[in-house]
Image 1 (cartoon, rainbow, N blue to C red):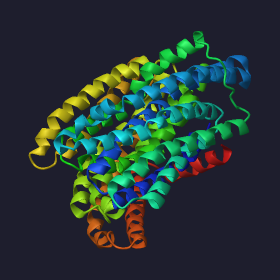
Image 2: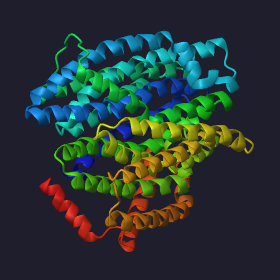
Image 3: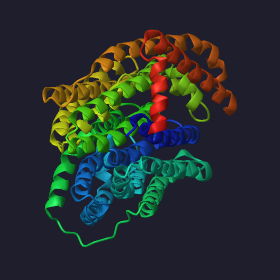
Image 4: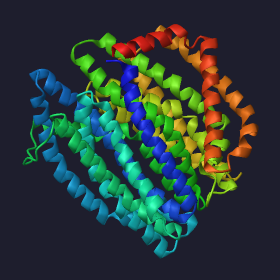
Length: 528
């Protein structure tokens, strides 16, 4: 398989989804701003986001795909894999129905746990009841995205990566439509419309994947559930993988709860908006690489091609660093103009831009780590080891919790308490990557090759050069970032395009990449 080409198809769809998410967040900032209504929605939205990471991008995929591929490989026919998938669906569906119902009933304590009761904001009973209502509106998305993840896993195993990667676009279309057509006269009405659109978007995603599976000859029937040996093995793999794959989301949930409970109104919104911008490269690169690497590495290992599996992970790590290092530099050196151009209009003011920019810079420090987690964990999951990543994730979550408890009050003394959660998340993710990498290396399952070791410092130097150029360009672009939509788009495009050009030239100058590499990549893409 051509890794770059597969990543391009997944990354392209994910990029389209993230751009729509950026449009959504821009409308959210315009119509709602940064206040209790926006904080309440983002707390309610955190829950489905966590489960999307656990299942669609993590646990279910990590457990299901290797078992599905093994069934197909042992029999030599797709039918055996589909039989396994139907049995998995039969067991999963009633569990999800019961779980979703229980979550809706328990929405009050869940909302309190995710926000610590918004203690610092001192909401009225009516305000907190509103936050609980938003949670109940978004909770059904958990069941919908979990079912969609099963169908998406089948399509990924059939190398139809783009179809599954396109599904989140429908969620963002639903949310953008809700903001555009149904925003109310006050921020509370708009937040309620947004919460309802989350579940509508989940239904659209599930419908799209049902159609795509049927079109690919992989439609599933509803059966009577039977908890056989395969299902016991699947559940045994899912439970630890849920925590391991969702370490970043769990860290963000902890950060959200502490920010809502210990910081002033608007802090959750600053963290959310910063995280969404940080998710733009993370979604395109990290999720794309994770989606492609797991089935690829599991197939190579199932045929005893261990050296090829390790080489694939090396190239995955190289691609991850090549694409994330410049994004990190851009978010550190040019966070404020990026936030200003994207969000500062309507209810989102200059002071909101400054505070959100601080959070974005803190998040971006861990951007390479967030992506490298997606590159390294397939090395465990492809070998059906889901316990080790969860053990390492628990350690990283401990680092995140300790970091939050230290950094929030420490930075709060200088009015930057909301920077504590993003910074703690970045540090804990870096710790998690270190644990994953050293464990794989000690087991003999991963070793960096000469090409990766040579290119990594050169790519880092090229990213620093680009960051310095962006820093000096900012004063010339800044005056155009609060004007009309087209002027803002042009100014941001010039800033981003100029940075990309500088990074490309710096990579060639430092020897991080050569023209021969680009020609080889193009030839490989044509063959792929």
